[in-house]
Amino acid sequence: MAEAVANGLLAGAAYALVALGLTLVYGVLHIVNFAHGALLTLAMFAAWGLHAAFGLDPYLAILPMAAGFMALGYGLQRWVIGPASHGDDGNTLLVTLGLSIVIENALLALFRSDTRTLGADSGFDVVELGPMLLSRPRLIGFGVSLLAAALLWAVLSATDTGKAIRAVAKEKLGAQLCGIDPRHVYAVTFGLGCACLAVAACLLLPTFYVNPRVGNAFVLVAFTIVVLGGMGSIPGALVGGLFVGVVESLGGLLLGESLGQLGIFVIFILVLLLRPTGLFGARA
Amino acid sequence: MLEVKGLRAGYGPVEVLRGLDMAVSAGEIVAVLGANGVGKTTLNKVLSGVVPARAGEIRFDGARLDGMDPAAIVEAGLIHVPEGRRIFPNMNVRENLEFGSYRRARRRRASNLERVFETFPRLRERARQAAGTLSGGEQQMLAIGRGMMAEPRLLILDEPSLGLSPLLVEEMFALILRLNAGGLPILLVEQNVVQSLEIASRGFILENGTFAMSGPAAALRDDPELRRVYLGL
Image (tube, rainbow over all chains, first blue to last red; front, side, top):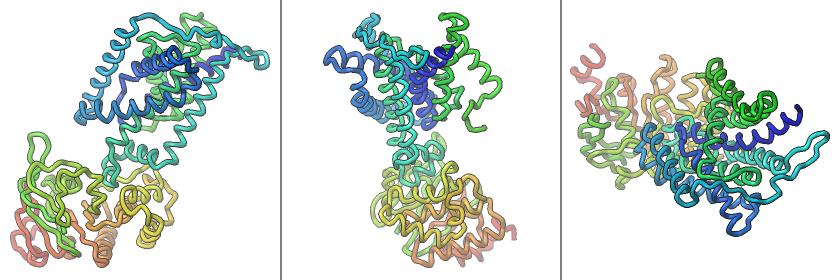
């Protein structure tokens, strides 16, 4: 039981990171980014490719991957999503959906639907923690996820850019009249969201497989987390992610592996019924 | 200082501003007056680059402003304190003021902050309080203080008296006079015709996207037509 909870927490950290990117983009741009799953897939392929081509360990790839995806996200929002949407949120939704279709099918064309793994044994390393046996890659993933979330929090609360992001999120016109360029802020935010995905991809890769649709499994859960934690709330995404990880793990233990995810969606429906603003959401 | 010629702007198929000509000279208060929905706020938004001009030109110190983005206009020193204050409710008073110097006068942030606190001692008392919890009058002070942080060369005030009690409205107009006394030119955009014309040197009456009347404030105050339409006299 304790082991299931611990494993759930470890798995939840990865969910949290994916949800963090999603909730950040929602909280600032006020759009649901439908390309989030495809971008996670892309990040996993990139991390896999770096390993396959250069033998780069996914953990060492975290920083360059985060930087690369930050730049990719910035460019996508600044020069593709932003201009193509003409300031209309409905369009943005469709553009991100279109983007996800393009990315997924490009990956499908390049790599076909084969499922790949790192093929290293390190994915099965375990660490003994008292009476529990925990997966080492997941333990590392947990630590790095928390670190990444803390870093994101620090950026948002202490740096000029972070403050500008919070300013635009709440009061766009006021921010514009202070000389803040929302196009830049949106692009940085989208970039940060993509950087979260890049980190998540590097952490998932040692224990997970890669195929052109792999991101969707995570993003569906991430949507649940974002609603559970409160749309746009960063602590909400973190706590929600860990919680959902535990629910899934306990569900798997009690109901059997194939029904493990059932609990997540039961909770999702309960949250929508009882507390639609989520755990940390602002009251409407 | 600020010159507007043949300015047209609108949203979608609707034209809101239909050819405006006006000017603000160094050191003066110019009032743009009119009822709800005649285009006052749109004019301000066009001046600060948030809404694009469709025709005409805007010059600030001789340089064309129309077509520039809002950040560049702030950088040039044309500072717009918007209707409804538009402060950042989730941040404290001090952080809000610091945003005023995001693009301009950043190096003198500390001394300007001190100057704003001297002008508005109330804001100093509440420096650590979340801006969203301030009263309406305090929020208006904060919005103006945020504008002052950028060391404006021309200040646009959009409906600064809106939603304030009569006593606070008096204070607000006295404050505008004080700001102007230091040489700061102010474009005051208001529904409050009487009090605005008392402190302004010139006035423009906006009706349906055009200036129906304009002239020295004293002349407008005594205009029988204006008195009939806006004051019910």
